[in-house]
Image (cartoon, rainbow, N blue to C red; front, side, top):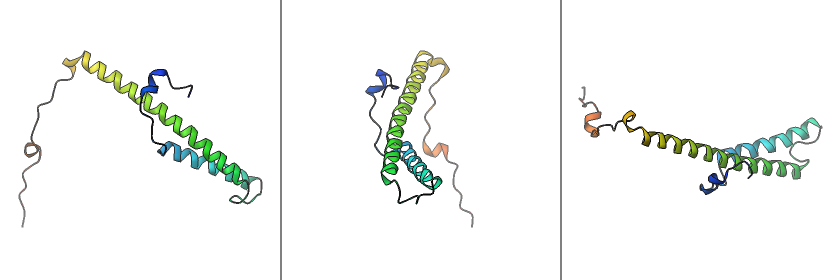
Amino acid sequence: MVFLPDEGKCLPPPGVVNRCSVWLAGVGWCSAMLHNAVNHRPPLKAGVHRQVLMATVGWFIGYHLTKYENYIYAKHDREMNGYIKLHPEEFPAKEKKTFAEIVMPFYPVR
């Protein structure tokens, strides 16, 4: 799509079924049914071709919004990792602890 820069095209594509696509397909379908109800037509039976079209358009827009969202998050992660590499003194490595050191001892009460 036009809104995705060239560097975002190297990211893996999102799944065809994702939350944004499903949500916007449902919104498109409901808007077509609402249009039928406002015009005093049977909401489920009239204009099935419009319902399919609106759901498909919503699915398409949701897919491309997910691609753009993934690009924004990848860019943000790249900038944060670059900052961490340039300023290691601000991000000291934590000492590793075993699980037994983290969890408090268990004493059964009877």
